[in-house]
Structures are given as C-alpha cells and as structure tokens.
Length: 431
Image (cartoon, rainbow, N blue to C red; front, side, top):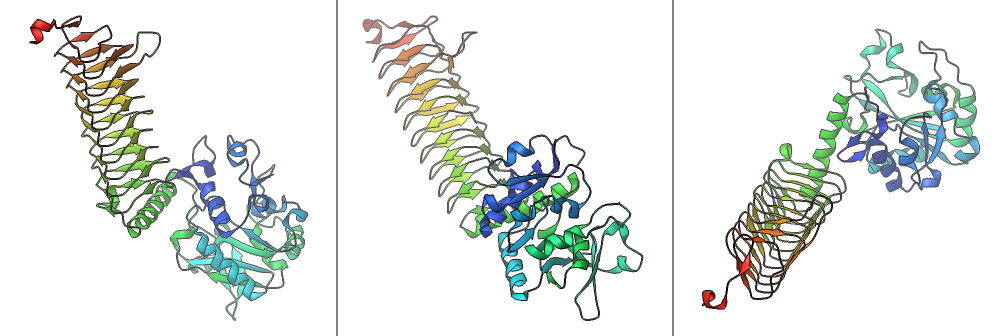
C-alpha cells in the first residue's frame, strides 16, 4: 500500500476494509467474542480500532497464513466449525458466507475452500484431481508453467472442523520459496476437502495496493447505489455520484450528478440533492432542495432549501420552510421557520426567529479577536442589505435595519435603526 496506515484500516466507501469483513461476519451471526483477528503487533491504530469488535490475536512475526491461524489457541476455536477469511477482502457479502457455510455443513467433510474462475489475478491456483476433487493449491509465486494455465483460483475463504484443524496446523512446514507456513498446506493433512465455486469473482478480490483499493471502492459504490435505487431513490448518474456506507436516503429522493453524501447523513423523502452537492453528517428532512452546496453537521427542517453555492457548517439548524440562497455561510446558527437568508450573507452563532428576512450582504460579526459571541434576531425582523450586527446583539420582535447599518447596540422590538453606527429613526421621521 506504500502507506503509514495499516492496510486493513484503509477505507472503502467511508468504512475501513476490516470493518466490512467484520460486518459481514456479524450479519451471518458471529458474535464479537467468537470473532478473532490475527494482527501484527505495532501496527498503528489497529488495536484501538478493533476494541470491542473482535478478540485480537498477535502474530509476532509474519511467517505466513498458516502461522497466523496457528496463533489462535486451540481452546478458543472450540469444537465446531472454524471460518477463516482475509481481512483485506471487503466485498465479500454475508449471503455468500451463508451459502459457503451451508455447503460445508452439507458435505460433512473436515474442510471446505472457496474458489472462482479468474485468470487475471495473482492468487494461488486450485488444482483438481481426476475425480474433480481438490488435488493441491499452489501459491502464485510457486506456480510452474503448466499450472499457470489453470484459471480456478483460491480466494482465501475456508471452513474447517476445529478438531482436525489444530492437528493439521501442527504438521505445517515451511517447504516453499518464501519459507513460510502456508495455510493451504493443511489440506494435505486432512481426510477430505470440498471446493465450493462462487459465482461472483469481483466479490472475492483482495487489496494489496492503491489500484486495487480504487477498484474495490468503485465496486462497493456501485453496490450501495444499486441498493438505494432498488429502495426507490433516483440516481441520475451513478458514475458521478458517491454515497458512503451508513447513509440513509428516503423514497422518491433524487440525487443529481456530482453529488457526494457521507458520514452519518440521513436524507428524507422527496428531496432533490445536487448537482454538485457535498453533504456530510447532516440530518435532512422531507422535501428539501439542496443545489450545488457544501453542508457538514447541519440539520434541515422539511420544505427548506439552500443554494446554489451555500455553506452550512456544524451546528447549523434550519427549521421548516427556510430559504438559504446563494453564497451564504452559516455556522452554529438556528434559523426559524419561514425565514430567509437569500444571498451573500454570513451568520455565525446566531439565533434567528420566524418570518425573518436577512438582506443581501448582511453579517453577524461574531468574533472579537478572543471569543465568539451570539446574536439574537427575534420573530418578524427585517434586516436591510449590507447590515453588520456586531455581537453580542439582540434585535426585538419586528425590529428593522436600514441598508448599510452597523448595529452596535441592542434594538428594541418594533424599532428601525439606520446609519453608522446605527441609531433609531425618530417617530416624526418614521411618519
């Protein structure tokens, strides 16, 4: 991988590849206390990442896959079946594991291994005997010219009877070019092995470099988008749309091209997202329109809209039917129902009531050089264009500001202020 990040912690569609493997196992019904991950000590972040997800087993030296499995104490394996998977195979589906386990149990043999037809991969080849059973598995680096013509490959998915497995592991010897203990050599020491051919070769690919990582990302992205489409979401152009694992999107929502939805985002029904929208960790209700905007950590109430070219940062909440227009930025702000921030405005640390209009070019000057301060704009206020509200400020219900006003004092309810600094218009002027 040429990376300081351990391979299995690299992400596929927002989830580390080891978490995809663990998730498939959990979906099959394997609980955390029966799930063992063999790892290299000293890999940064692996132990912390897997805490509570699986039991960790250290392999002090990388002496091969057989040596790795042998590090798991025999008493931990129990008396039943032992399922073995590669930690760098994130595309393997839970239903494929179920099918494989069912085939293993139906055969009543000490071992089963999965294979696919794929001549393009540098994986070990499955050699058959005259009866079609397993004759041998030859690792790619040990292939002869004759065995290189075999297209059936070993994909690293196995199931063993625990009792026979422990005895077979004890008989492994490093009789190969790499001087390692190969797990595939255990089949020589077992009384029978079934080969289960899987139909989808793509599902079994392993990841050893960034090229394969990108291919797996493409495959997983397609899988996630197809699942959404089958649930009633329209994806205009899947090739340009990215939705991460864990995102939820409601029926009849439309994802326009060049849209990216990540993190813990939840999108409701009948929304229209994009084009060119980037949304992360947001809660979006029904009937929302988001056009060419960037949102992170925001909450949008039903019937609201934003964009194009809006930026909604963490802590922003739009109530129902709020309009945020072009080139507006909001952070740590709450906007009441039926209010509008039409364009070219900045609201930071603001609480805006219902039915408020924020004129173009208006800002809350929330930072005094040392700390952030709040602005409160009550219901039915009208903020004129280019207004600067120097926090901390409160504008009472129905207050108004004139164009270009710099508000340095609180404004009582119903009062209109104008000028620099802003001052109240006398009653005779208002008349």
